[in-house]
Amino acid sequence: MAIDGRVFFDTSVLLAGLIEMGDASVASRQILDAVATGDVKRPMTAWHCCLEFYSVATRLPAGWRLEPEQARLLLTSEIMDLIHVCDLPEAARRPFLASAGAERVAGGRVYDAHIAEIARLAGARLVVTDNRRHFVGLMRHGIRVLTAVEFTDEHGS
Image (tube, rainbow, N blue to C red; front, side, top):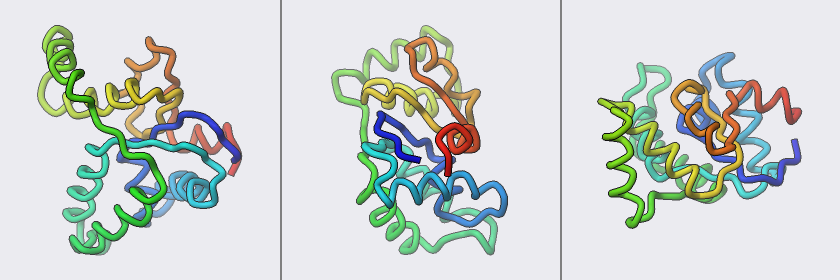
């Protein structure tokens, strides 16, 4: 799966790759294994995705739920140590809000719009997410959007 591109991972890939969720975890686990071995070079994610990982991982149903310290350790060793964590630059915040308002982005959709804008500004060429429909707007900027399964099918495992 040797990939040397600007690949950006959404929270859904991080969660499924680090928390065993049966069949839903297979492709994401393969992707994060490829990151750990260096087969995926220069991977990115958003600080927002790190916080979302922590939030979701510590409130999952019993059996999958992580204790806060476990979530922190996974974030630091498996995400922050291996994946470049990006954020929205200060100068881009007001334009982002103006765009969200103009495009009538409402409710929780603003979070995915925020993550998408971070990926775009970070120079991502590909976003991997299991919430594909939330990121299809990136395609108008020439950024491909694939699910974890599509990514592993395309790039091997």
